[in-house]
Length: 474
Picture 1: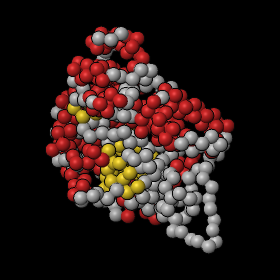
Picture 2 (picture 1 turned 120 degrees about the vertical axis):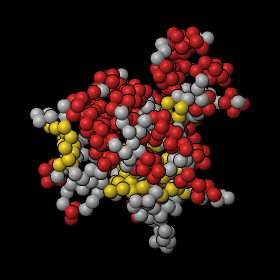
Picture 3 (picture 1 turned 180 degrees about the horizontal axis):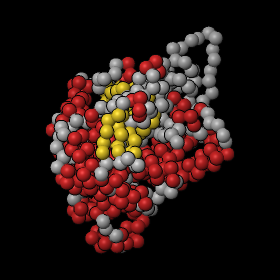
Picture 4 (picture 1 turned 90 degrees about the vertical axis):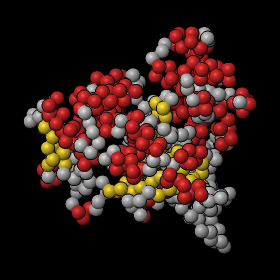
């Protein structure tokens, strides 16, 4: 406790999320904690650090994990600040990484203001310019980024959808191994919607199509059984549980119509995952198998991506799984989906490090690759990655698209994961140093580097040739 007492612990967003999950008003929670409503408001807005005494009171009152509540979230904010101060517009205003870390730890409101200001600057720049270059080409579209941020703020856990999916599962009587036939029958009985598997020459590039006029749900023959079941479950969410989803969207503070539509689709997919992989039994299976991704896929008749994604949602208070981050990357290194977690934050342009195992998985597809990696700031984490093929709707000579799905966590959780045993068995486990991306990484002498760090002058020497592509000094 001395360590906790020495540092300022800012838990505003966690406290606010806990209160909302419990369905409490500020006044009621303040009364239960024996503090004033105004003080609770200051705590929730990170205008006051939480005291050790209040942390104990929180644990006694709500039976929460104190370690999780008090865990330092400054690394996530530091990663965002590193990216912001790497912007060419700030090249003449150098700020050391130590200063950024101290700001994130000691002045989180100021750090959040800088992040918000830079977001506004990017929005205005994007509106003023037609093209993009450099880092911007790796940025996710704004609706995707907005939804990603919302999911992370919500811990990618939605109790109302979990409860709705559980209720629906009991209504259907869903059993493992029979999902597709049972979901098909339920769709037809409850919503007069008949599911049909259609040949690829009919579906073209579509994998699912809800034909409203003929009351049919058409699925491409290219989909594997787990994918077919997932599409049916998503359709059930859109037809029968739209109100529950809409309430979450309305409370999200997302106003952009495209982002709201994407969030609707995303939350329907969340419902589908919860329906096919019920929280209690899935968490127990994950813990019993020590997070064996292959066994979980067989047991729940789910794809590798579905299993990995579901593992990121196991964040129910007092019944949590390992806090994982999630990544989906294509063969060109473009990251199409990411969810930060476990205190590991990848900048929105980052993650494209040639040393990181998700980019190695394409060399040997179909098997799970593992790695212990360390970021420049000292964060060490364990990653599992597997390259998988996707349904090919284009002609054969275009090639079958492949993606790598990666799942990772802070290395302190690795001992709970069977896939990490081989790495941890060594007396001194091998750790690979990686970066957020070449233009944000200061590591010298890296043979995987594809670009120099922003703001660093290059050196050219005719009398020496180093192995790394760029020489910018140490």
